[in-house]
Image (cartoon, rainbow, N blue to C red):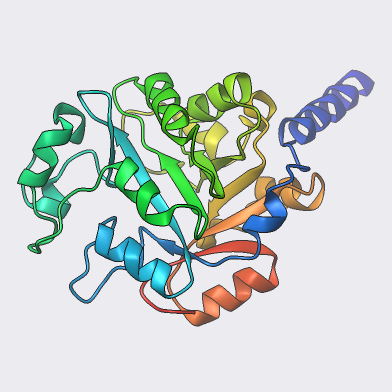
Length: 268
C-alpha cells in the first residue's frame, strides 16, 4: 500500500514538473498589449493570409497571426493549409511549389495570390507584432524553423514563433533560445489521422513542455479549461494565447482571463 502511494505521488510530481515552461522572456509584456487578427483581417472578399488582409490589420491597429510553409526552393510561403484546394481551388501541395509559381494561384477567387514571408515582413517593418505559426510537412520541421529564423535575423520588429509540432519549438530552444516561442495545442484525442494516440495525448496535455519549455501556450479557446492548461497557467505562470475568438463575448472572456487574444470574423 505504501509503495503504491509513493508511486502515485511520484507520478503526480512528474506530471506537474512536465508542464513547466519559461516565464521571464522580456518581450512577453509587449506582446500582451496587442490584439491579433487571425490570418490577417480577412472576410468580405478579403482572403485569409493575403497581403490585403495584412494591410487591413495594420490599418486598424492590430497585430497578426500568420502561417508559414517551406517551399521547394527553400523560400517561405504564407498560407495555412498544405493543400491549395480550400484556398485556391486546386489540389496542389504548397511544399511542391517554388516562389515564382505562387502567383499562379489566386486566393478565394480574388486577384490576391499567396504571399511570401518576406513580403509580409517588408509590409509590417516593425509597425505591429506578428505571431508566426510554423507549419511543417513531411518531416521538414528543422529546415522550416531554420529558414524562418534566418529570414527574421535582420528583422527589427516584434514577433514570436509557435507550432503544433514540438520539434519546431525544441529546435528554437536549442538553436535560437532568444526567440519567444510557444506551443500550440488543443484537445486532439478523438481526431482521426496519422498521429498515434499517445502523441495526441501528450500534445493535448502539454506534456512536451518538459522537452521544449515554451514561453507561452497557445490553446483553443473552447478547450482552455483542460486540467493541464490550468496547471501550466496557474502553477507555473505560463502565458496563455487564446485562439480563435469568434465573438466579442469570447474576446472579452479571454482578455479577462489574461489570455493574449487571437480573433477572427469581427473587430474587437
